[in-house]
Amino acid sequence: MPFSVFGLYARQPVLPWLGSAPGALRRKSENGILKTNNPEYRDQMPKLDDIIAEMADCDRQERIDLLLDYARALPPLPERLEAHKDASHRVEECQSPVYLFVELKGDQVELFADAPIEAPTVRGFVSMLLKGLEDASVEDVLSVPNDLVTQCGLSETLGMLRVRGLGGVLRRIKSEVTRAAIERAS
Amino acid sequence: MAETQYAHPEVLVSADWVEAHLNDPKVRIVESDEDILLYDLGHVPGAVRIDWQGDLQDQLRRDYIDAEKFEALCSRSGIANETTVVFYGDKLNWWACYAFWAFKLFGHKDCRILNGSRKLWMDQKRPTSTEIPSYPPTNYKVQGGNEDQIRIFRDAVEAHAKAGLPLLDVRSPKEFTGETLHMEDYPQEGALRGGHIPGAKNVPWSRAVNEDGTFKSPDELRAIFEQECGLKPSDSVVAYCRIGERSSLTWFVLTYLLGYPNVKNYDGSWTEWGNLVRAPIARGA
Image 1 (tube, helix red, strand yellow):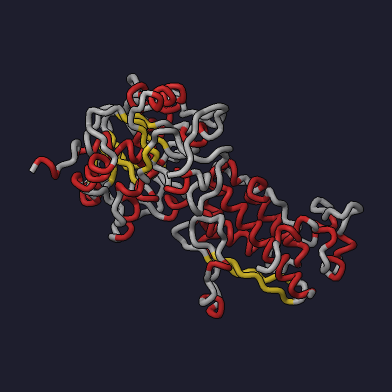
Image 2: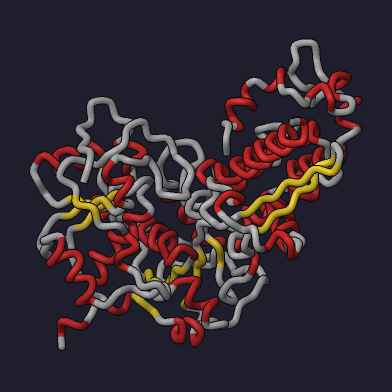
């Protein structure tokens, strides 16, 4: 990569594409920080919020079952992407081989992922994110709360030591979406 | 030939043995995994799940549950004082050995390990179930633990290291040298300094296990721990890793497979030592 995604990400308010994303300015608060608790905004991103709420309401076993359902439901990677499961698409933070692909269609983000069923926790989490971020915009993705794993109650169920790889998946999705958006803008 | 025997062969059971005892009320099969969803995906029929973190660790202090909670855990898992408990799990039985060690802390008598781990069971396409079994509660009573013999705390570890007694660091070579603070591909778990306890020898835990999940032969194990590391059965040995999980497998190998009577697991391990103010640290190979 010719530039540091995280370096750019840290300067988020001045990202060159932000102004061009539809509705971007309207959704920005005065200090440039995206509002995720704004009710109007939340209406536009109901899926992931519903999933978070459902997960948070579950007891331990229900949460495990739900995550397993997601793990089983992860759609296979499109054939055209199978050949590209290489280091550049692998999520480094995960001990299991997890691959992520981000594509943009207009402002709409399309996510594809692959993770082995032998690693059901991370596969389930990835699948949950993909479902929750179906039809999401670039900004929707970047506005996903960074403590999503905890908000879902997964830190409690899985234990702190196990959830850090999951946080890595979310960070990776965000950085890839940022990169794709910058590429499109340039 | 005596040399080809494990010191306590009865603690290892084969997959055939487990399959023949699936409905034996005197036997309880316990799955302990790193990925806790694996159990729900399919487990040895009748097996209960015991989670190293959610079930065995105290949720407030960094410690194990107390005797009362252990009794409750055993009772709801259908484990009585005289039950034969067979542990198996993912990661080549690393968490199974951790649970085995924790059960020994509370003095449970008959603990065994499924040789080959979850991997061998699945690879051989042996029967599995997604049904979560329930067993009548038992009247489990902890009868004096083994903690003094198998667990060691930081001050004693420092004295052990100063006395030049054998210390095994079973983490990966890069963690040992201090190049990284965690296993490759694993998340960092919060140690401020990298390196190892001075005097420790680096023997990554996985060297004791074959790729199919079974333990190496007694002769292969002796080649590693005796010819290579210079240990002898009369030694007092301390093993550690990052949080005491990988080293519980090494503890199991030395204690039960090679018959060393004086091996302790330092469960504070690197996440304690690497954060201790003024604790001595060595870097490099």
